[in-house]
Length: 128
Image (cartoon, rainbow, N blue to C red; front, side, top):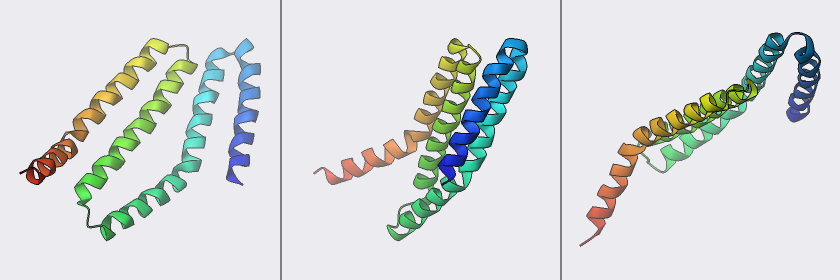
């Protein structure tokens, strides 16, 4: 029941943030960020187990490790960028949040080029 712990932590932190915002908004923002980092750390173990399962499946299917690691990096970038953008939005900086998301999309696209090239090469080889 880890989700109960995470939800409880989130609710308690939210109550403290709402109370602190009136007197010390900078402290409220810091508490919000720290809570987000703690929640991220709590789910890291789950993410690692998913990565291990995917790696095992890729080994069974004889998939090149380069492609799997690239895909996992892309997923990691997406999660980290989303977290960063949410922190920016929580701070009232929607414009910066949009730029973080845009940068992540560009980085993910660049990282996906070798995979796209491999897929296109395979399609070309299959065509007569």
